Length: 249
Image (tube, rainbow, N blue to C red; front, top):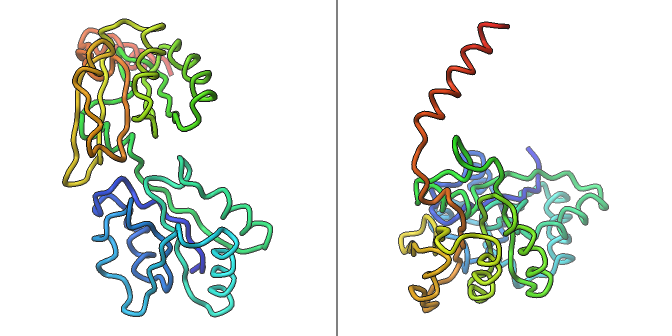
């Protein structure tokens, strides 16, 4: 077993972390996490002497020092990020330092907010009769994000926007340049948590329905996938094509 792990903590529901993540968490001696973004229930079965450390209280270099000491003392240290480490997990600073210091580590993936929101809405981002392209992006750097979003909005794809709630008006205006006014939208707040909220609308009316209030950790979803009717005729043609292809092999 390794001494260093970077773990995807999932979207919020503690039952949505992987079995491997749960096993490592329960064996850890040190856990870096954020109480603001992670459900405390996932730490109910940790070791009695395990230390829970707030990630935001430590610099990347201080975390590196912890990791080095963990290896030297044969202890297990875990760095847990909300969702999946690869998507807005802010683990690049850890990975680069670990690699340059020749520290062996493992990344354990997790379910991100986009997938949790899709599950809550019972809608797939791609599929028969829908687009084959799904894009995840963020809106935290306004000017740079606007340029990127212009290009994304022009694509025929489903879109998930992280960290964009405070700029919802700008996002809507950009998409209205490229898509129909009745293009469906959803805002999912705290996906998979007990206080999850879902707001449905479209590009023309979402601003009328929306009140920022206490909505935090919200994801904006845009695309016809949210309301599209399932195409049974296309399914039939697709299955016939697959059967014909199988017979010809």
